[in-house]
Length: 85
Image 1 (cartoon, one colour):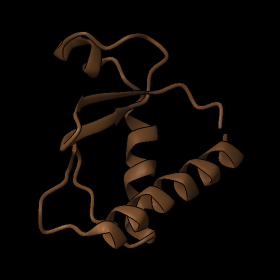
Image 2 (image 1 turned 90 degrees about the vertical axis):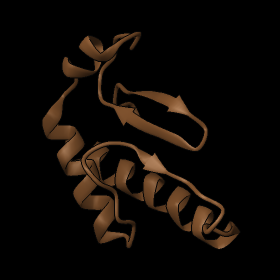
Image 3 (image 1 turned 60 degrees about the vertical axis):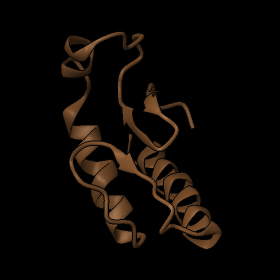
């Protein structure tokens, strides 16, 4: 939706970092847009996904419906943020 970001981490433990710059280490993560991350996390909670300040954690306890709900929440949250910017 045109919001500069990077997805970093591993498939079962990852996060969205709001920056247009490549993320290679922890210092790069510190340079992200913290206000966008806070808004994203709040929108995710509004969509029923409890996401802490950092990282998504996926486990065997999550089924396909949980993953689908999370993907839909990410898309909806990004759409809202795009309109707000």
